[in-house]
Amino acid sequence: MAYHFVVGLEVHAELATRTKMFCGCKNDPDEKIPNTNICPVCTAHPGALPVPNKKAIEHVIKVGLALGGKIADFTEFDRKNYFYPDIPKGYQISQYKYPIVTGGHLRGFDITRVHLEEDTGTNKHEKDFSLVDFNRAGVPLMELVTEPHVFGSAEEAAKAAAVFSKEFQLVLWYLGASEANMEKGEMRVEANISVSPEKKKFGTKVEVKNLNSFRSVERAIKFELDRMLELYKERKESEIVQETRGWDEEKQKTYSQRRKESSHDYRYFPDPDLPKMHLHEAFDLKKMEKELPELPEEKRKRYGRDYGTKNEDVEVYVENPSLAVWFEAIAQILRDKRKVKLASNYITTDYLGLDKRGAIRAENFAELINLTAENKISSRVAKDILAKMVTDSDISPSEIAEKEGLLQKSDEGELTQIAEKIIMANQKVAEDYKKGKEAALMSLVGAMMRETKGSANPQVAKQILVKLLE
Image (cartoon, rainbow, N blue to C red; front, side, top):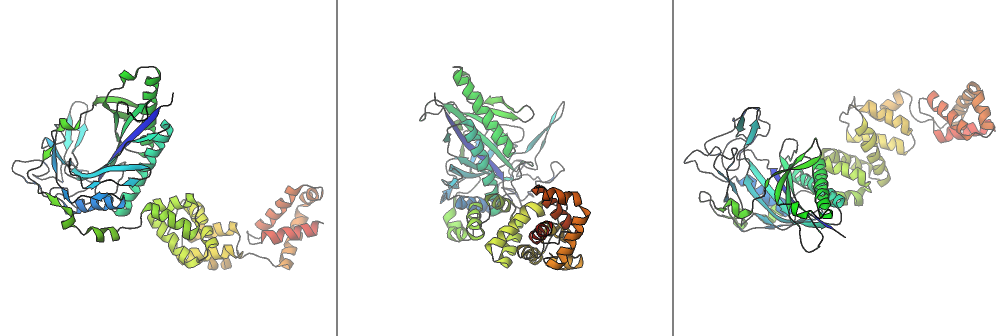
């Protein structure tokens, strides 16, 4: 029997604003001292009134435009009523019927909505008691909800969810909307999961909460789908109940938390303390759309088209915008697709592989690539010079090569004298080559390269050795 694996995602991201969502308290995710950035508004003192943060609303609009969604004209805030120690008001200010964004698409998932709400405080549990830190209470929190997507296998579903989550984090970075650091809890992923033997009928939904790494997203979804599938195969599908489940990173398995509430359980109603908003009047949406930065998918296409960069290299640049800026500066100097591809190879392998990486001027790196591409230095020498350049950003590769005698030697007279010396010092290896052992020749070439500190042209050296040995 063919089973269908359904995944819908909810992603929460704390927005990068100077102040909280409804008050003037500092929005500082790095604050270590508990209950420092708090005031009567975010701790719900009687009579304190909230005021919306315009920058947070702007961030959500930009996200909606980047995803190709529809920006609402009318929107409002609602009260989502439930009790928990980290919610001082007894309700969370959120959005229900009129979200800021509807629709859109990203990496295989259709977007249902993107709305804005306030974050909760942080519970800190000790052995015999619990404490609440309200520093995070009231921080602007954006929630994105996707449509459920049907997959053919648990592996495919889990991988797709992780790819989507990573891409959304990149979009947030590029827009400057959020740092989205999952380790700090600035971005959290929740997955709504079900398995069904019928394609047009979803099974009982389970929500896996608070996944804080892309690896956890993939592994938790895979585990939970496999768990459900096994229950179906054993005819125990009645044991699958609508609930929220947590992910145990240590045990690599999900565990039951509580039965899942429905939206009516929260008794949503419009917040009477906050004004209704008409976004098309308050914001110049056409101008905002024109001012959107180049997004990750656009950058991938441009790099492939303009530079012919390998897909693996492109992903390195997409995930490291500052490195991408440096690479593009080098590419502008080289203006040759072959040399640009060579430069990219050296950046993503040799440069990033150095233990200590210092800044290198684009002009100097481009010069290094020119020297290599024009066979003025060998690839081995290029790597050695690169290692020296990171310790002195001002010195040019030509200066290093000339000072240390590393410019590639192609003069046959000079190389012939060196080759004769190498053959005399390696008589047995030379005899092995004469007996038909091709590997012996490369051993002699290697000896010549060592003798010349890598400056000999290996092709010329090989030709001379063959001529002398024959």
